[in-house]
Amino acid sequence: MNRDDADVLILGGGLAGLCLALQLKQDDPDIAITVLERRSHPVAEAAFKVGESTVEIAAHYFSNVLGLREHLDQEQIRKFGFRFFFSEGRSRLDESTELGVSRMLPTPSWQIDRGRFENFLGERARALGIDFRDGHVIRSIELGEDEGAHAVEVEHEGRRGRLQARWLVDASGRAGLLKRKLGLSAPNAHDVNAVWWRVDGFVDPDDAGSDPHWLQRCDPPDRWRSTNHLCGAGYWVWMIPLGSEAHSIGIVADEAMHPLDTLKSHDKAMAWLQRHQPALAALLQRPRHTVKDFLFLRRFSYDCKQVFSSRRWALTGEAGLFLDPFYSPGSDFIAISNSYIAELIGRDRRGEPFGPYASLYQQLYDSFYANTMGLYLGQYALFGDEQVLPLKVIWDYTYYWGLLAPLVISGRHVDTGMLGRLRPAMAEAAALNAGMQPLLRDWGDRNAAAGPPPLSAPRPMLDQYNIDWFHAMNKALHERLDDDAFAARIDDNLRRMRGLAGEITRRARAAHGDWDLPPAEHDDALPAPLPAQW
Image 1 (cartoon, helix red, strand yellow):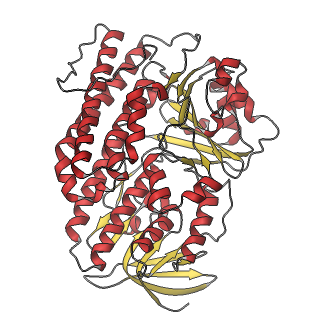
Image 2 (spheres, rainbow, N blue to C red):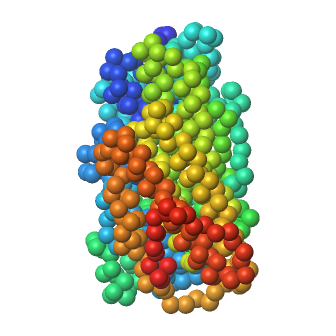
C-alpha cells in the first residue's frame, strides 16, 4: 500500500462513520474522504450489530438529511411505535396492561436491519466517490501538531501503509481507538447490562393472546412491527423485527436487581424468561425460531471527556459515548454528533474560524447527554410499575418531542443565534426534567414499599394515540416554521411541560396522601389532561 492523503479520514465504516461520510460528501462534493473499516463487506444480515430501532431524530436524519427514504421504505420495516406490556409473570400478553398507540403516529420511524443497512451505506458511499476500504485494520494513530496532517498506519491483507488527512474522525465504535489513545474514557453511574440474540422468523406478540377484542384494537393489527417492551421491576425485554425476516430479542437489566451472571448465556436467558416473561419464552420455543447468535455486554453505558476538538479531530457514535437502549437514543446521538462534525469541517474548508464552535458544540452535546441520562439513572426499579411507568413514558416523550427533537429536525441545533434565543427555555426544560425524574423514582419506591400488587385484570389499553395534545406534538415535528414561529412553538411546548408536571405531581400526591410534594402549578401552563384510567 502506498501513502495516501485525504481531507477527512474516518476510522470505522459502520453506521456512524458511513453516515458521516455521506453527509460530508452531500454538503461538499469536492471533499476527499477515506473510510477505513475493519470488517470485510458485505456483512451478514440479521445477526450483525444491535441497535435496530430508530426514533424521530434518527429517522429524520436517515430519511431526509441523508436522503435514504426509498431504502427505508423498501428494505426496512416501518415501525409501529413503542409498545409496553406489564407482563411480569404472565403467560398471556392479552392479560397484561398495554401502553402504546392503536394507530400509526404521523412522524415515521423504522426498524433497521443493521447488516442490510450498512451494506447499503457502503455501496452508496462508493457510488458517490468516497474511498471506502473494508478489511482494513488500524495499527497506529499520530495526531498532527498545529496545522500538520494526522496520520494512521493501516494493514490490509498483510500489507501496511500510511494515510494522512487534515481531519481525523473516530467512528470505531466501542473500540474507541482515538478515545483510548487520548485517555478520554469516562465512566458514569448507570450500572446496567444487556444480553441479546436474534432468531429466525418474526415473533408476533399477538400469538401470545387470543382475546378477540385485544387482537383487533390496533389498526393495522401489526403489534409485531412495534418495538415491543416486556416490563418488570429492574428490567425490560425488547422485541424488534428485522427486514431480513428475523427478530431481535434483548434483556436489559439493572445489575443490582438482575445480575448479568444470571443472564449471560442463551440457556440462562431462556430460563430467566420462563420465570419473568413466560409468554415470550413460550413463543421462542417454537421450532421456527432458530437462534442465530447470542451476545452480552456488561455495563454498556459510558461517558466521554471530549468528542469535538479545535485540533481537527472528533469522535462520533459509540466511539464517544453511549446512554441506554431504552427509547433508542443511540442513532439520535449519531445524527447530532455527525451534524456538528460536518459543520466544523465545513467551516474549516471555507476558511472560517471553527475552534469556538467546537467548544460550543461540545457544551451542547454534553448537555444533551446529561439531560437524557436523567431519564435512565436510578429509574429501572420502577419499570414494572404500571401506575408510574406510563406517566414517565408520557413525560419523557413530551420532553423529547418538545425540545430536542424539534431543535434537531429543524436543523436549529447548529444555529447559534437561535440557540442563544432559546437558552432560557432550554434551561427551564432541563430543570423541569431534573425535578420530575426523582419524583417518578420516589413514587415507584413508595409503591414498592407498599408491597407488590396482586396480578389483576389489565386496565384498558393506555392508548397514546388518543391523547390529542400528545398526538399533535408528534405531528408538528416536521412543520416548517420561521424563527419567530419556531421560538413560539418551543415556548408552547414548555408550557405543556409545565402543565404535565403539575398533572403528574397532583396524581402522585393523590396516590400517597402523606407525601409532602411542592406545588408544580404555573399560571401560564397549558393543561395536559390524561385519560382517567392512566
